[in-house]
Image (cartoon, rainbow, N blue to C red; front, top):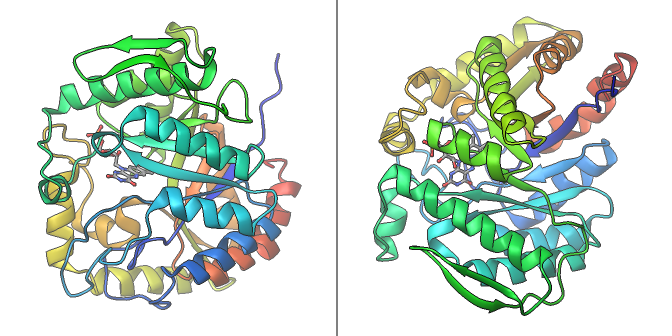
Length: 355
Ligand SMILES: Cc1cc2nc3c(=O)[nH]c(=O)nc-3n(C[C@H](O)[C@H](O)[C@H](O)COP(=O)(O)O)c2cc1C
């Protein structure tokens, strides 16, 4: 039997102000700046992490916290971080309605050359009506959004993998003639492709077209169910797919402290920003129907792992055991928790044989 690969560990970066919890309790309010993101990415590399991953936003969600009011664009953000690091993978998140695939393919290939093969892409269909209204772009019905996303991915792969100048594609959404992307990416056959949709439309797209499925499970049972489902779909399509779960770990030797921190976050929930966020994200698909108000306040729906360092490792073991291949971590104090992860959690993960 093939030996299972080690757990991939990454950070859901604060390239947006207020990341990640929708709450006015924010111990490090200015961690969204590029300087801060650079230091966090460098610390993540020192802590032995595998990747850093952004959120792509074009407009914030208001409220007292002005949630995600400031936002660093993620292709240009990645270019800066790739120059400031040496080993870690850096992802960009691309909204399908905003980019022509030929442009995205070229930008991605350039980022992959800047980093000698350390760049990856999260391709999102988009859900925030206000962002697209601002650009004069009409949103498609949910099902069609994912059909267009599938065509977008097919175009990227054609441009990245087929002989330059030869790729032709025509669908209701895209027309590419003699598609040319030179240079093609360093990483062959192409940089890793992620999708983070949660609906049936998304899971069927991801299983057929992507390398990684990023999920937002609310608990271990949900993580097990979605992982089993999406891997089964991929297997039926003759593909291998790996799954990442979004989590928010808070740990301390005193196991009560993380609980107190969670209560502080929830107590300072920003109701206006939560409503603005939640009213859009699951619309037409029910993807976030089970996420409660408290869950949005704590890590914007990230799965909570609270306790001592050993509890965190046990929680990661549970995820790994249900088939999860990686975790995307949101932190309360990004810089400090990234460094502490390297010192306090990583050695335990090595000891546990998880990494
Ligand atoms: C880990 C993760 C990262 C995401 N990043 C973004 C993002 O940067 N921008 C965005 O508009 N949506 C983002 N989404 C939302 C998804 O693309 C998707 O629209 C959402 O999960 C709802 O799923 P559905 O579209 O299948 O209904 C993210 C979701 C997850 C779970």
